[in-house]
Length: 197
Image (cartoon, rainbow, N blue to C red; front, side, top):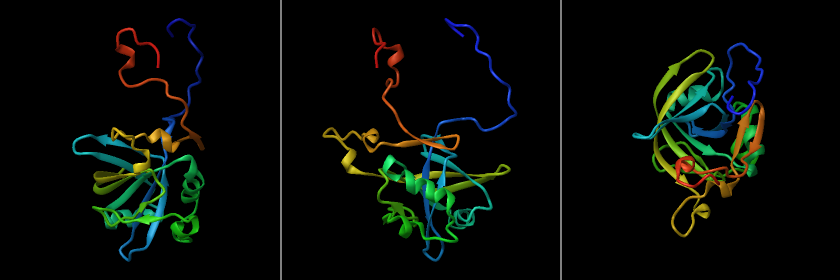
């Protein structure tokens, strides 16, 4: 390590230690129009053009066959205000409970997909599945983003979106955390005379 002694590290068996992660609520509707929400921490950006994301779901989850059959879902970003709902949707099954009703969440129609969006989320991405990759314990749903709905209360007078004002949360090894202070902006490390935030 530069400027310090080498730190001692334990060697562990292979595992998923890529933390923290975005934690999102994925909403969907089955063929009969019944809504459901599943919390996903294994989600990520895949491609810019076309805009694509991925989510990983266990085949035994209630939501899995709905996602396979309909090929549509919405990814809803989560906040401090939504942390209880986020956890609830990850531990309660849609087989047993209507999560929108139980949590008092507002289903909002999508512009491009039949899946409902969560009105309380600051950003919702409407997604259409392009491919499903069976990988083992989880199957990866590769999806194109068909539309994005963003809460206008987080827009400034220059039409810039400020997600940080929504108090987003992340997930790290079984724990939810609020995002902290800004530490820098992209590219600040190479700007002349700019070592500050």
